[in-house]
Structures are given as structure tokens and as C-alpha cells.
Length: 424
Image (cartoon, rainbow, N blue to C red; front, side):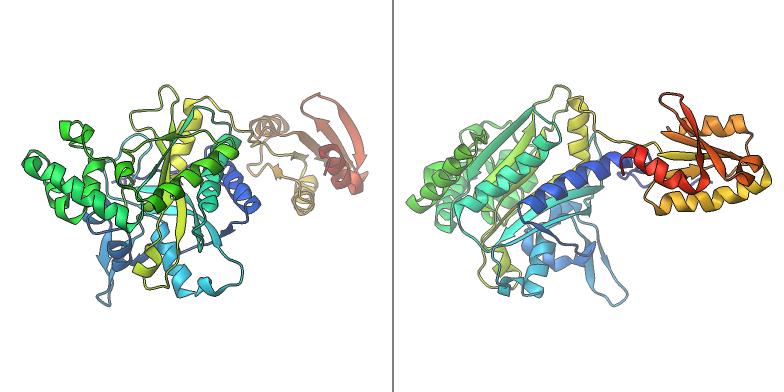
């Protein structure tokens, strides 16, 4: 009986994994340019971290978390998102005490959500995220947004749409909350059970409901922008001013809400307008979360961040027909003939690799013709051919596979010769 891969997961095979490595490296390099440093957190955490930090009214906590008890009876969860874990580490390691503030971090790794698998969405997915903790300056909001847009543009995406909104401070949100309750309450029985449960706990989440998004009350719901106090309005205007100064194009969408409870003030999403990308167009989401650190047991510390799925990013690149500049071939392939030459090829291969040259040889005792075919399959740039006679004469034939040109070089000079041709 064969064992099947779990539903909602995928194997990323050679030939495809190089794309992942490339986009992750581009994102990391840009983060370093912005002075964000990498952080790595555990794949599982105490369940309470997410029920408290993400919010017990969210779909993630109510329906999608993978939870289990360990042998000590502790309730643990596979992380469904990265922000709560980063904030937990920020608090636990007292990073708020470091002299350089704000604390600017990025992460990349697998997340887990038990949801219906569909195109570009998996139960195990890889999320790349950024968090900036310790500043209430609207400029850091604009920086985080521009960084997210910069990653997509650096990779060649052009069909992008950035939408932003403000959820306001606590006072603005409370006023909006009451207005939403009054708006939905008379007809809440027409909504799904989830929305009915959210009415009193977190009515903002009703606006994010996928089942009832076409209900007429959704389009007439009170806008958060009408309930922003002067301070929140000024903050949002400053964020917009900074984005305009950076030439980052955006659209203000008063219906935009984020699916997690910890957001306030700035919220944003980046979407793909590429034809054929699919019904779900969101690539990246983020926003400000000024109360999350205190919620997890730390001192009062503002924060803002974003996260995106690598799977969704790769789907967007495919939809726009973006070819990533990935080289998969080896730089030098050794073809050997004769027992002594085959034995020497092992040492020669090691020397090439030690010099930083991507190299390979035949391990299946193929004939010379078969070895050359293997070199073609490896897309080798150069093929070094050695036989027992060449070994005795301390020489080797080097063939440029692109031009077909061959030259005879000293065995002692092969490594330096290949390095020179490769410009290393």
C-alpha cells in the first residue's frame, strides 16, 4: 500500500525549489537593505499565544488551527501565522531593551491552517513576513508598505494594486463598533452563524465574512473613515503623504478590514490584477497592531508588519509570465575512461568543488557517449575528458559545450583554467 501525501500539502521538487530559493533571497536582500534582521521562531507554540494574540473570534482560531496536547498535557498549536510568534519572542527576549529601536525583523517559514485547499492555498504554506516594533511614526508605516511593494516589483510583477485603510485608534474603533452593531442587529438573523456570534464580540469581522459578502447590509455598513477622530485622521493622512512622496501608488478602500483582531490604524493589502490569477486576488496583507505586545505580556509597544505566501507570489509570477533568472546547470562535468582515470576523477571532482565550481561526474559506469549525454542533461557549461593515457601524461581535454571548442590543458591547471573561464 502506497502512502499518500497529506491533503493540502505539496512536495517542492528539484527544478521548482530553485524558484523558491530565488524569490526568498530577493526578499531577504531587500529586507537587509531596509535594516530588517532575520528571526526564526518555533513551528509550534502554546495555543494561548494565538487565541490571545490572533483573537478567539477569528476563523484562524475557531476553525483552522492545528491544536494538540503534548505528553505533559500542555495545549500546543502549529503556528497559523508569524506575527504572534515574533512578538512573543520580542517580549520573552526583552528586545524592547535594545538600544537600536525600532526593532525591525523578518521571518520566513511554514505555517499551518486547516482550511479547504484550493489554487494557491495549502494547509501547510510558506509565509514571509516583516515586523517593525517600537515606533508610532507614520513614516514606519509607509516604509513597511513600500518594502512589501518593493519585493513584488523587484521580482518583476507589474499588475499590482495597493489598497489602504485606517481602522483608527481605540476610541475611533469603539465608536465604529457601536455603529456596526446598530446597523446589523435588526437583521442579524439573516446572516450566518459566525456573523451572529461576532455581532457583540467583534462586529468588524462581519465585514470580512465570505459567506454574506453579497448581503445588502454589507454595502451600506458604516465606514470606519466616518468615525476616525482628529488624531487618527491626521495619522492616516501622514501615511498617505509619505507613500505619495515615495511614488507608491495606492487606493483608499474604506471597506478593507484585516482578518486578525490585533490591527488598528493603518491596514493594507496588495492584490494582483493579472489576468487568470484567480478569484482570490490578495497577495499580501498587513497593518498596525499597537496593542499586541501588551496583550502578550510585554510593555506598551507599537508595531506594524505584513506577511505574504510564497505560493501566492509564485502563482502571480506565473500569471504574469515572469521568467526568473535561475541557472540550474553544472559548471563542469567530468567524463572519464579507464579504471585509473575513473579513480582520479573522484579527487579531481573534489578539487573543483572545493574551488567553488559546481561540478559532477558519472557514477553509473556509463560509456563515454552515455557520459556526454549525462553532461547534456546536467546542462554542463564545460566537460573535462580524461582517460588513462591523459592521466599518465598529466593532461586533460576541456570542451566548451556552448561553442564546441576543445583545448588540452595541464591537469594541474584545470581548476584555475575553469575558474578563469567562469570569471571566478
